[in-house]
Length: 309
Ligand SMILES: NC(=O)c1ccc[n+]([C@@H]2O[C@H](COP(=O)([O-])OP(=O)(O)OC[C@H]3O[C@@H](n4cnc5c(N)ncnc54)[C@H](OP(=O)(O)O)[C@@H]3O)[C@@H](O)[C@H]2O)c1
Image (cartoon, rainbow, N blue to C red):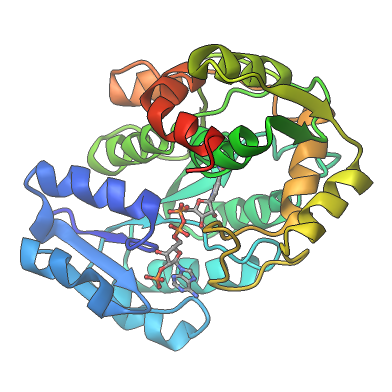
């Protein structure tokens, strides 16, 4: 019997994965880890097993993973300081008999010149996973289109300006849902052991193109403003966004920090994220959805944001 343990199951990515697995009739195969089991009471009602576990309390993880033979390790949120957290989860899984671990990593991390702050956490976690003795799968997700269109998009619509330090660098932003459904395919399928997948959207675009597309679809004039790194930091500082990550802190509904975002923009500008594959289709059997589709799906919300609503 396959028993799948999922960390970060209460988050947005974990929710999509859990919904899909429950819809496949696999609720009783699932062990869901959270620091707040009450948050997942509805999952227990669906037949999933909900267990307490905290990356920061390694002693909680042995019990949390017991009985599982597959694991989805959804990366934590403390960007730049996650290696210790992920090590605790990987060690517990290896000691507890998990045979195959899949991890939500990030594209473009092989080159150590890539300045993205997130790179270190991901490359180190992949290294630990490969050395663990378990079979592994690295799900290297591109930048979530959701983060830029749904989360940052309303601010762009309200100001009429898209500020970015990514210059004319290109990336293939991907729907978080396509990432999560790719993970489901890996967790439930065979032949994914010891493989790296680059989970990207269907085309490379720069933010000037995305700005023009958002303007065309919403009918609202928008201007792309290329900034340098200092100006980008100053903008985030003025919004009250911390430079370093603060656990569970949200500014304007978004759990962001500016070191992550500014170095992310640099990585795009310098070409490290210009990767586009059809791995979503290979894994899920469906083409990856586009940034255009995400804007179209959110057009009413985006237009309302332009009206101050
Ligand atoms: N590729 C991209 O563009 C991109 C963008 C954003 C995020 N990401 C990555 O993708 C991951 C998933 O994103 P998401 O949107 O699902 O994030 P999310 O909704 O913020 O969920 C984060 C999850 O992390 C869990 N978590 C946080 N600290 C933990 C700890 N100390 N111990 C155990 N669990 C902990 C939380 O579980 P509980 O609160 O239930 O304990 C929560 O379920 C993020 O964590 C991040 O690494 C990638």
